[in-house]
Image 1: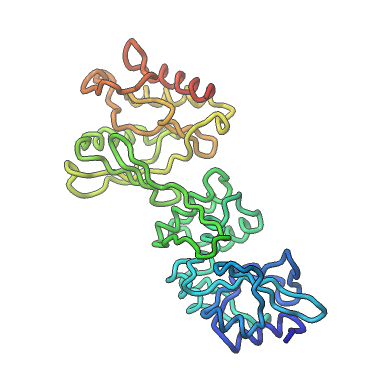
Image 2: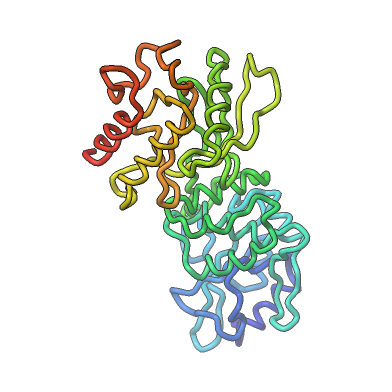
Length: 359
């Protein structure tokens, strides 16, 4: 059997199995892109029932591939990706929720995800662009997600991450994690699965990105004193644009295993993301430290970040008030970026920048 048009195909699907058109339905069913370059993305409850209803033919021999041809008259066909519940295209609970909360578009004749009450359309699109795709987000998706994200600021959403190409994927993934979304590897190996690192372990602490603009820093038991030093330093640098915001000190037995929640500081500073006015910014960092009466003592390339063209200084666990910089010094503090004559933050900043620029 061949369908005269996609409306007929949707009528058959409506009678056979619960499903949703996952995205890109604005021009459906009248103006579908047919042939080898036009995919229709469906999530169905039962793939076998959907295949039978659509008289679909599998495009690839591999059992894990999910692309089918839906036959239309005059030799035409519609390429269709039949995602199904349990295929790990999305987490199982998300797939079920997408179907449980779907809505029917009367003027189009098919089902789509609802963005209320569970924001499944918004969440599924964020998941798709940040995990299934590794390249920069398409401008049409950016416009759509900006519009859909209005009013969602209370959930931790910040639309500015969409315009930060260096942080688009990691930032969105952090937002999804913050809202309890699991990441699963699809059974269909033709689908990308690109997970960005969100946890780092250093000498003194473990850092986990917990949101678009937030990280959690848990200090190791033998470095609990670093919590106090970093907290006091960030509090003193509250007006600086070059230091992370101190969000909160985490409750618990701070002497055994405590931490802080601070603002996300961006990407590691590198030659290819160095701001044009880096000399001015480095001077401002030195000025901010001096104005606060602080000596960082551990400035090196790995402690310099950049966020939206602003250089950020991080890791204040060894920062002390000026005059106490020679107290309690680990032998390797500051590394090769430490001045031979003692701690000099401006010297360490300049040497760190030189190292970064020279690679």
